[in-house]
Length: 188
Image 1 (cartoon, rainbow, N blue to C red):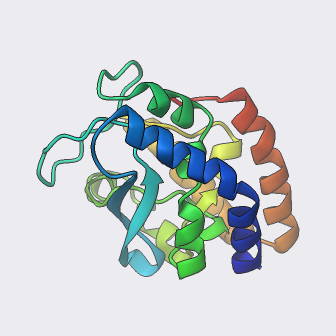
Image 2 (cartoon, one colour):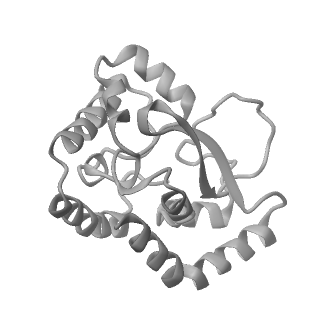
């Protein structure tokens, strides 16, 4: 089902994907896609794809989380982040088998290490493929966080999803994701 949905969505959004790629290229030098290692099924790392929304800069392997009003975010970047269009290239990750349409959102490896040491049940989220959207996201637990308590709430929602996941539940999460995207809660 994931491959069918991802393939159909890529075809449907192809004109938008092309337009965004051109706008990114016109606005700032650098690649159109941002790539980063994230933790996936069974904790295995994979490369996630996103539209690049920030100016390119060298920071080595250090993860510098974007903040609200971050001056590294480009004009088109601000729009595609607010609308979550920057996440659409992850449909390629679904086609590759790295991700599902619904599941826990994957975190940067540095965040997996950091929060894995602080949150007892953090590692349980690796029991399933990460997703484009999930229970945590429809509960409003999305976006950057530096508070352990906020991340723990997100992890609890991820693990609740894993314990209770069904096809019907996935469809419900997908349907509930659309209004969340339109409201752009916690997106920047």
